[in-house]
Length: 369
Image (cartoon, rainbow, N blue to C red; front, side):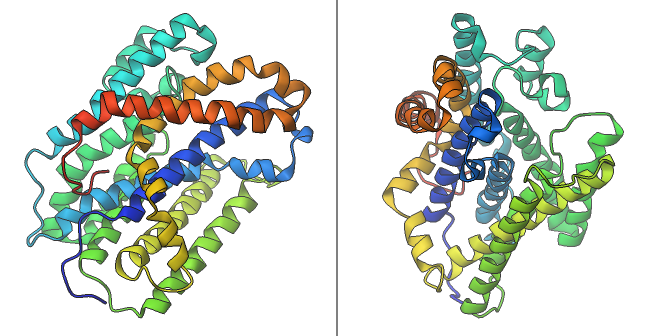
């Protein structure tokens, strides 16, 4: 392993972020297709787009990794006092702009807004980013906003709980605290929308510390572990999320299964991050990391946040007008939607990024989440 101080930014991470954002867009196209078209009219390969939940989980791991990486390289671990202020500057302007645009689009085209969007409680909880606590409002206004609220709340836990615990008591106490906080919303009847994603964030934090203080593992073995975890996680995701899977009827068992799948995916993501940061030339992953570091994917990753914020109402509008074609000829409608809607979503997201996201970015990449 290299002994020199690692950088605080890796291009391949932006590539992962870009691919994941693109997949989320495709997943939401799939979601609307299966609602409109008959399931039997769609080929089996089309349902490989159903794993949007996993894509968001990967986003959370990346966020923990990127935010922890510059901190883990300091001795002792120190969090900048203006951390929350910088996070607010990074996240909130684009979020509120996207919220306003979603509502304006909903005024002109009501079909783009989910139910309950105009309820005053929905508007208020979205303003304070706590709408994910109530299922009625968690996906109102703009569906993907639930995860923005969750990540915003994680920032406070990261700064006020996780980092202080890591500084004073180590990782075991930090992990136990994260586990306790993850189940706490259940005792207060708060929706929380996947509160265990906090554990995925901690997995990203732990990976960042390992990158800063690399474990003594042979590069080939590390790559083999990463590939094995990725294959195992992918296989289980496909098996569990297929329509014929006998999903447990007992809620706590179903939740335990879902948490287990997400944590395994977090381990696979963390292992791939370790390989990419420490031994990117290790076979069999060399070509993958070269692709992830390509200019196109890094560019896509640079405005992935804007894609995530803006794509859902745009898809709702576009697919509304493509509904007749989807009903009558879904296989022909899919490439048509990709050829028309996807460029529109990416182009408008880029313009949104220039207007509402890039002005608030740091001039130098320092591990933004």
